[in-house]
Image (cartoon, rainbow, N blue to C red; front, side, top):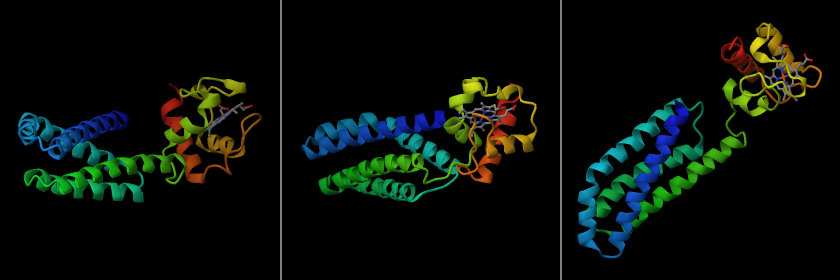
Length: 201
Ligand code: HEC
């Protein structure tokens, strides 16, 4: 569900930026008639795209475990660019319109930075699923059944929560200990994920 939302959000952002880009180019090249025509033609589409862009953005933000600096700056930029763009295109003010387009592009760049920051662990993953996908699927597979290097099939494990936590913390045979890599909360979250999503499935 969340990844579907993320894809729709990206799609809306791309469409939004594209409409913006065309309008800015038309304005900058003094094609006023074309700009008016384009604005008229895309009015409804633009409304739908802007609404979708904001709605999916708000939905995704509400689900984030942690809000980082990049994200806050990005939102401020996007929110600032909207009134600037409205005034810029209405008054055919090239500086304002270009500036607001520039803000959107910077926001785009920040969205990427924020993703990179996440990938480098600046935001600590607390979702058991994420940790499992990242650290455990190599041997256990995403359904727990892969059995690489003798890994036990997690879908048929008979262990209770405490024993699962112990194996993840201390390791066993070829499976390494994770207590130096994961916090107790993270180990607990992965154990919960195994029990709720893999065991008996
Ligand atoms: C290098 C491969 C490898 C990786 C990576 C790995 N495991 Fe394992 N895992 C194993 C092996 C091998 C066993 C079987 C150990 C034994 O009983 O001899 C095992 C056993 C387990 C068991 C016990 C299952 C049972 O029923 O006995 C759990 C729970 C488990 N792993 C969870 C995890 C989690 C969670 C991660 C990621 C944080 C992880 N493993 C990463 C190889 C791996």
